[in-house]
Image (tube, rainbow, N blue to C red):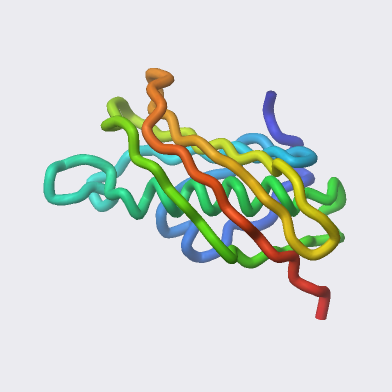
Length: 135
């Protein structure tokens, strides 16, 4: 499924710098893709663990904030993020998916997964997020 471009927000500075893009976004779900680049690697030549954590945090954050209307933006803050690293990535890009698993009016829970282009599960995460009030 491809995302309706009218629902996209402009990339925020960190997203723009790292080069990831939102490729699917709907109620309670988001998918992010990141092409590999030398500046994303650690000393071993593998994607840095902080990159996995950033992708997971972002995907889970987007998953809980979909409104379906680009004029109505919902924001959230991460209260807790737990990442489990399970394999080494291979290939040219990473795919992070996040999905909202529950919550209420002010707080929501989400889970996420990073896979490489071969479909190998690289990392998993769970998080707790708090919706921000509109100013």
